[in-house]
Every structure is written in C-alpha cells, then in structure tokens.
Length: 308
Image (cartoon, rainbow, N blue to C red; front, top):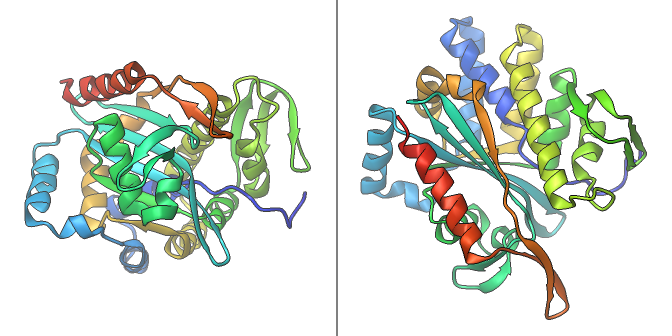
C-alpha cells in the first residue's frame, strides 16, 4: 500500500451510527448507553439555521408525522492549513411511509451556482462556506429540502471500515489503484483498500459516475455490517472513531427517532444517477447538467417523499 499519499474522504459513518442506535433500542448496558450519549454530544454540531424556532417546529412536525426526511452526507478533503472541499456529496431521502430510500450521489465537479459566489464546482461550496453553504447550494440548485447533515474526514472512513472488520463488495471490473489490486467478483476490503477502491475514476469508462457507484456500494456494505454487530469491544472502538471524525446536527433524540421509524428504509434502496457532460469552461473542467436534469432529480425526490 502507498501509505503517504493523500486520500479522499467521505461519509462511512452511517454504519456505525446505525449500530449505535441498534444498541440503544436493544437495551445495551449502562456503560454502552453513556458511551453513546457522550459520542453523540461530541459529534453534535448544529448549523446557525438550526437555531430558528420555526425550523425547529418544522423538523419536529416531520418526525411527529413520520414524513420523509433528507440527509446530506459530506466526505471532506481536509488538508493542513486548508479547510478543504467536500469530495463526496450524497443525498439520502428516507420515506417511512413506503419503507424506501433514495440515494443521490452528486458528482464533485458539477457546475452549479454557489450562493454569493457564482458558478463553480459544487465541491467548492464547502471551501467557501463550510457545511452551511454546501447544504444551501444543494437545496437551491436541486430545489429539494435538506433537513440534516453529517460530515466525516478520511480517518473516520479508514478507521471505521477497519473497526467493522472490513467490508465485502462485488466488483464488476478488475483494476488497480494506489497499490491495491481489485479482481473482478467478490472482494474483501480493509480501510486502506476501501479508500483506493472508491477513489478510482480515471480508468473507469464511466468516470465519476462509476466512482459514485462504488461509493454507494461501500456505504451500504458498511451499514449492513454495522447493523449486524454484537461485540461491545468493537462497538466502543467505533464510537471513539465517530466522536473524533464526524460532525452532524442530529442529536440523540433525532437518532432514536430515525431508528424507531425510519430503519426499514434501508431494505429498499434505489439510486438516482445524475447525468451530464464534461465540458471545459475558461480552461477548467466541469460536469455540466442541463436544466432538465436538475428538474428530473427534483421530481424523483419529490415523488419519493410524497409517496404513501
């Protein structure tokens, strides 16, 4: 493995959080409960708009009536002295009425209007204005509401996969990346291998779309692996990793509600693929979407959210 190279970062915290919630609801011992509470308190990082009383009422009503909820997952490429960019942006839309989930991977080079900054790559929104501007950019370009977010850095990804004991994926094409070899077929990945697996795009005929598909595959593998965990020792390791590497505006009550009323959505997942074209504008490469594609994604999410 090449251990000194810069690695991409993205949100594989979800499997660990689902594990934490499973243990809460399943009646884990007091020690575990206290560990969960302390970890979630460490991770809890509300946005400025979360302080709006009207927004709080809106979110409370959504959970009370078990309406669809949308989460933005951010994998942040942080560097020393640099806030970095959101290298991965995934919208999860959970509808408990139909027990279904939509997963939308937004290519990082998507050409959008960043509020107050103008046209640019969508992953630059994080560098300009952190999570708040990233969330606003997604909402205003795709015209869909984002209720909650979670962001994670690379160490959270790598350590999380290792703490889970690795994940298994089904690879549809053999390739090598970053010193790792990935044969076609079923592949077992540790944390460092998983980083290489989801980074490859230049040798993929589908480019970023192929990369996004591998990201979604590893996310789901981590969720399913985390949900089946029973080892308190490993669970404690995952909580430590989450606390050190994850930020979210979900609090303990929110997570318990998600588990109680939304957990079955993970059993019926469909992907919304964003289709555009690579273009150079001013000498810079962007992934450009026609207006009809923004509208299509909006329509798919709205239809999913309103289904009963």
